[in-house]
Length: 529
Image (tube, rainbow, N blue to C red; front, side):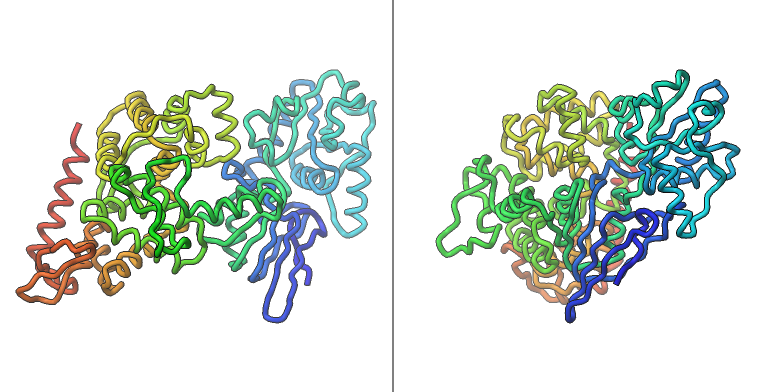
């Protein structure tokens, strides 16, 4: 079955059936409504093979109408200055969308021969356009010339002494597009889906597995895995990535602090057995936290994510668990905590670059490659720092100090000094927490399930505790609550917890004490300084 792809007029996707299995192959596609192409359609499929031309987060396009307004303004202003506006777009597809975009704008399009021939084919199949004329070298004044990108700097354009040239392409998002193409302006209008629509399309199709092609295929597949979707790039490079990700569940060889060798009766398939800290590494709890995060990211299976996290949480004491559980929700502070870190991307980038002692050009190359602050931090800092022991408590103290610090310069320096003492993996997860998104496919609901599993309590009770208190770090205690009795019982890793009344009926005194404490902490934080 063929489905409209929305890429250009007549482009199609292929939807296949094989017994109970279904497969959707997109080819080139876009989700936004095109002015000269059919609207894309989709079906739910077990397997999705998709193009990922713009598979990095930095390729997010502005609204189409906003871009068209900018193009029309560019044309009017250029003509008003006595020059000829030249718009560069592929002869098939893009040029026709540009032509449709100029309809009603009071402009006269003039088409390059290649664009003219393709447009005539469109018309033979029922497409209609505004009035246009074929290229005439003696009549370009006051016209909008639409040409393929190959015409730029050609003798045809060189003969026009006064002109302004603009490219219409998704690559216009790149900040150096004007210099790269040697043009006067660039407008981000594409026949391909941008990063946002690529992610959205996966949500719409809801596949069990995704294979990616073209562009940033490996990077986008990695992003999908971090969102909990099984995804792989259909390239040789991705075969290497597959082996790497299997190894990611094991501690990094370059980080000597990760812990002792597993005992003989430990299963090699269990990352936690490889990550338990030895006496030498006991002070470096954050590297274990980071590697558990990588192991969780490496599996798309929900139950396996819960098992990995539950096994890890059982190894922690009360204070450690309180910190780690909050971090695994993607936040530095609890949901009920009104404090904010006020750390923007520019502070993270400056601090990371300074800690890595990289030149701006080299750091920008890394940043542009990944389009993700956490991955950029790992790539920039791995092997370039002098790691020191870093406990979970120290990490909490660091985030609190960062929150109290005022001013971007002071915050940047504090962050730089800390990153310089972390391994690449630890730095990656510090930055992930700063940005508020771990991107390991772990929602707060899965953290609740892991806590319930770790401490053998009912999931509904854990969810209710988290809902009432707005702080998942309190839930460890609630997971140990019991029916009223005069006894104490061991909880989690054997620490004795005092009896706390059953979660379904917490006493008013407890609720008042807990929530008033949270309120007081938030009030002081909000009004201090």
